[in-house]
Image (tube, rainbow, N blue to C red):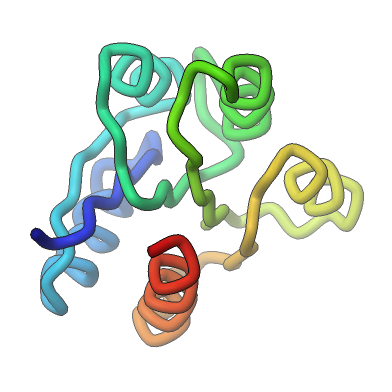
Length: 126
């Protein structure tokens, strides 16, 4: 069974680009429009192998999603998270890493970097 990646971004265009890139090498993808949508899916039983998440989103941003995941980590399977964002502030990156993010990629999307990071992290989690 192919690994599943939850793609969380408020831009439908970015979600489509990320999903297309991941699907081109065999990953299954599920989309969420923001952190709240992603959390609803996770709380509802979705168990992705990896999450690719933006930082700046309405309703619940990426850091808030990481906080909620941390608060409920005993109720969830282990989750590997890659941040894909325009955000590049060292404090924000540090906060995300402290909350469990394993990689930080800066937009615009570089398919080669995304695929490399995802492959590396999915292999480690397996």
